[in-house]
Image 1 (cartoon, rainbow, N blue to C red):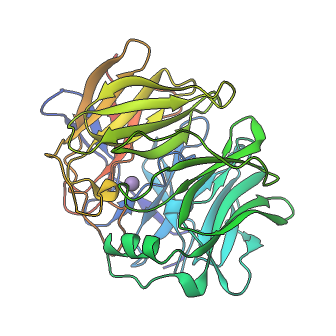
Image 2 (image 1 turned 180 degrees about the vertical axis):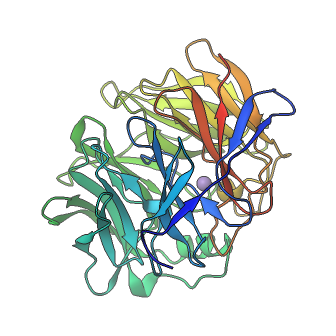
Image 3 (image 1 turned 90 degrees about the vertical axis):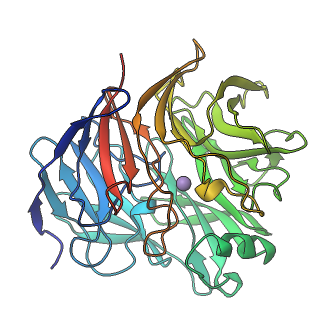
Length: 385
Ligand SMILES: [Mn+2]
């Protein structure tokens, strides 16, 4: 069982029982199939192919699905090929991903040949999701001093202990052509979510990780040269912010904001040019959001058991099973379909069952994950017009 293996998928089409939307399950329910992180490039630019993770060969590996005919090709083999970190290059020739915390790999989709573009130095671990700039010439990466990594316990409990451990971590700016890396920031703090501002490679952002009620200021900006480190906003008392992402046109940093004990949440946006941070609209309790190109529309996944948004007391709201479409100009919401995911950890992966919805390149569909059929699977739902 090796790279290059081909499988023929049979899709399962159905009408959502609440919205009536046409939904397609793309992946076979007897295997775990995962999507990449919600702001990473998942589709080729023409929308015809999609990268995903699957344990079809007994290990979680990265695959490519040709959406028109259901032909799935295994791209990687062996251990440690992290779909969570994977993204397609802007020209659709390569997929980049982290392997086992030790390297950032570029894989040629034509030949399936691989090259380590960056090797993590001894003593360090590549950590979390690495994200390219919009031209895919640089990656924002995070490394953790390996001795400071707390042991896995199979779920979210590790997240809180990692925060308490104040690991030494650093934010990197990696040149994807030469592999040259520069340390932008190096500190004793749990950090994550590294990104470049689209169209503005000189500006990076990252977050202070940890249980949301213990992090007083989540979203941070820093110049690529390490200067001008600053919090994007002052969080209000009791406010938590999460899952920030750049609107693809680079205009704003959007995120979910919520106040402990309140059932509604907000979409908020920070404009790095003006410094203005504003509430866009109130929303049901979504965990993750992702917008279209200019931020006019956003998709969100109703939560409730709170997956990675749980605070230190496991504070939870009543479950919300829907994928939503938000019009941020009209400030209106529509249900796309049910996701009915459990938010459960699968094979030690806390993100596997998170819906993490995002738009197809043509803006007509929502891609999301759900374990409603038992194991995590990928779905594509038609959006309401
Ligand atoms: Mn998540």
